[in-house]
Image 1 (cartoon, rainbow, N blue to C red):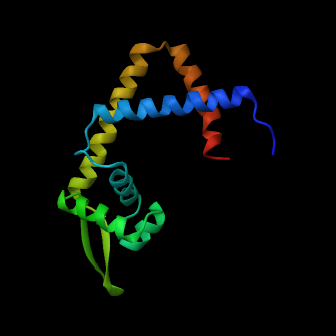
Image 2 (image 1 turned 45 degrees about the vertical axis):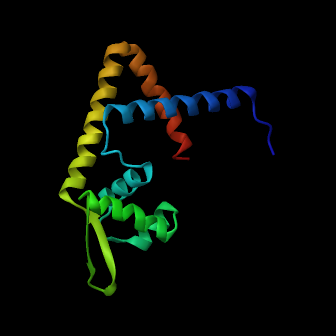
Length: 145
């Protein structure tokens, strides 16, 4: 195993702390009905692909089917998802976002984007924002090898 440079270890710690703080601050900006991270993740997944079975969602989210059932029950109770019978298998239900769920996701994203854009506009010069954009290009390699 290759030895990790001290600078890489320090950068990893600093980046993790920074990302956590930004996420926390963004969550404070827009309270998503006090949804759990798991519930928000499921809503986001349903925004990308609707008419998904609970078992497919559980597999995609890497949670037990019982945990997914709890998540879906909470989302359904809040009117954020809708369920319908699977036409190909009457024993299963297909889950999709409700209009309220779609609006909740959109409103939350828009509010957080506006907060971040305003913060970047108010606290950084154009040259500094260019530097941040350059750093983002490099950071994308963490998730897109």
